[in-house]
Image 1 (cartoon, rainbow, N blue to C red):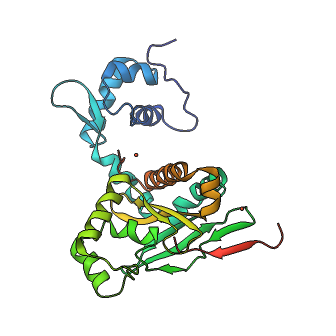
Image 2: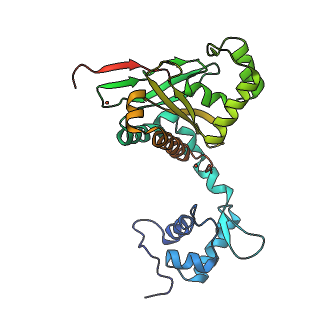
Image 3: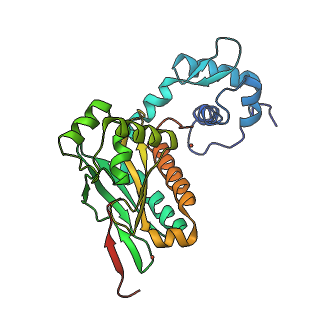
Amino acid sequence: MSDEQPARQPQGAPAALLNGLAILESFSIRRPALGVTEISEIVGLHKSTVSRMLHGLAELGYVQRERDGGRYRLGLSVLELSAPLLADLDIRDAGLEHLEQLTEVTGETSALGVWSGTGTIVVDQVASPHQVRHTQPIGNRYNQWNSSSVRVMLAYQPMKTVCELVDGGLIIPPKGGLTHELIQNELDEIRRTGVAMNKGFTTPEEFGVAAVVRDLRGAEIGCVILSAPSSRVELNDSAEDLQEAVRKTANDISARLGAPVVSENGQGHDSEESHP
């Protein structure tokens, strides 16, 4: 068998094309930089073939060589090639499967929201299978400061914009009112933890948690929202687990959209509309 025999036999496509794709596929988040020998071992091609193909891929911008030696990384042409696909993926297409998984794992209602400029609008929902549950109907708009879905989106708006929304009454403040210092402190904490919480702030029996979803540019384009009856969360002592599940789901949807990696209820349903 030749030393240059590829690891997989091409079927109906030129071997050189499939070998080039195999080289590109050898890079990953865990292996962002690779040398010729490493790639050769991964794809099953002789080092001379790998070296020759890397040279051609580098000329086209699909890989780039590190300045300090012989290791390679993916180049910007890979991003340009994927941009049309990523541009066609909206948050609903990218998110539904992950919402279904979130509800399956937690047993609670999950939803996707997008920011309208003055509030969060629900664009998709997967309802809890429990008889007693909170729901987030598609099309609902939330503009209360106490809603987790509102505060998590405000956390990534300019402070001047947030204060104007609150001071102008477009975002409804809590009964005790809000100072600019309190706004700053709460939003800082949301950015630090990655989630916003609603621990009975909108209604006594509601628990809500939300985390932002980012797009290819890293922009915050929406949020994952989970809502549940407070009594069930307290009974199961599940608040921290729900927070982590929402964070993970938001990160998974963001990854599906091409975002940069971020350092991490039968019959007679008693459904209440929630204000997460």
